[in-house]
Length: 276
Image (cartoon, rainbow, N blue to C red; front, side, top):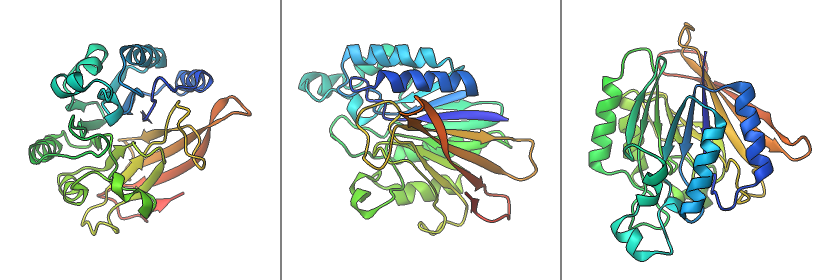
């Protein structure tokens, strides 16, 4: 069994120390193999905020950590830095390319940078990024759980959030699905959700949107507490499926508690689409 921690929108600079410590205790107990932090790591892309985020990531103790920048990780209050070195502060603490591929023993993750220095909020995927990511997905070793991770969502739970959708998301999701993607991870809107995309986007292949809420920040929605996702995948099972668990922070218990589990049936299996 492989375990992936999906967290997003930590917004260091607005973090809740008690929630951050509770998340560290959760990782100590559950021991995920991989953590995917899908953007908005900081609130204002300041060095002190990145330093605090880096210390937190190390404290999680997860063997493999994949980070992605969000729109808040590009300086808003320094025009020259935003124009000429938009990711400089991010790169000071998080090494590696902004878009990358990770191939594990049971999973294959394509991480895409969907931010742009000239966009304050919205995200986009370029034609070159789309072609590269699809080529990588097709070249993945067989039997892997294939994930595409980014900051901006390809699914939102209500019409009022549609302006936050990734630019060009319909074409992108169709191509990723055709290339073999199973899950698309995102954040940005602080609203967790786990939804199949085949029907609403009229896809011929099953693919799931997995959205994380805000992990440790005080910038929560009234209907969505601090939360993270745990994704469990057993490559030895005959049925291709992945279990997504949403864990919410409980102030009363001072810990993250499992709030929901979704059984995601993946392409290549004929069982019903989901069981909650």
